[in-house]
Structures are given as structure tokens and as C-alpha cells.
Image 1 (tube, rainbow, N blue to C red):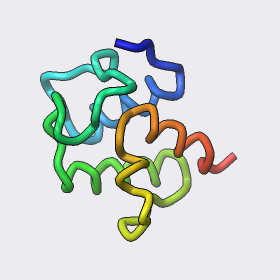
Image 2: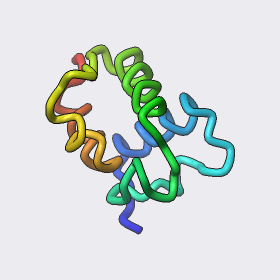
Image 3: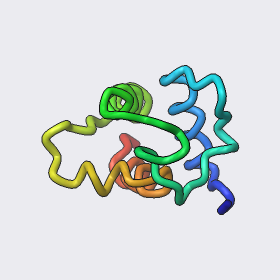
Image 4: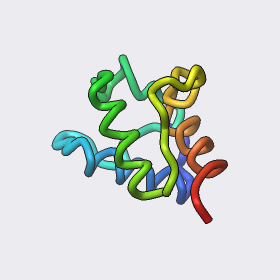
Length: 89
């Protein structure tokens, strides 16, 4: 497993807390592993929860009609990169 950056760990913690994941800790989320269809077992409802948590924490919206969502939500790394590019200063 690749090591998480500080930003990735912060986002992983947000995901674990917002989804109330009881069997996974933030440290266990591999930055390069798929968020959906992988070991985490996340689904489209979880994507909405993550988007809401991100908008509250980082001050920008992940819109459901964004054609890049599949790429954005590919992994913790891709989501973190997107958040870092768009977060409010």
C-alpha cells in the first residue's frame, strides 16, 4: 500500500467519519485503491455523502452532473488531488 499524504489522510478521515465506516480506519485506505467496487464496498449513495462532506469541509461543491466524476472518485489519490485544486483558500 502506498503511503498517504497529509491531505489524503485528512480526506480519508472525513470519508470514514461521514460514512460511519466501522470496519475501516483512515490509515487503512490505500490512496491508489478504487473507492467504489473495491474493498470499501462503497456505492452511489456513499458518493453523495462524500460529496456533501467535502463541500462542507472544503468550501466547494462536487456536482453530480460533472462529467469528470468517474475520474474524480476513482481513488483516494484522485479525489484528494481534485480537492486540493478546488478547495477554498
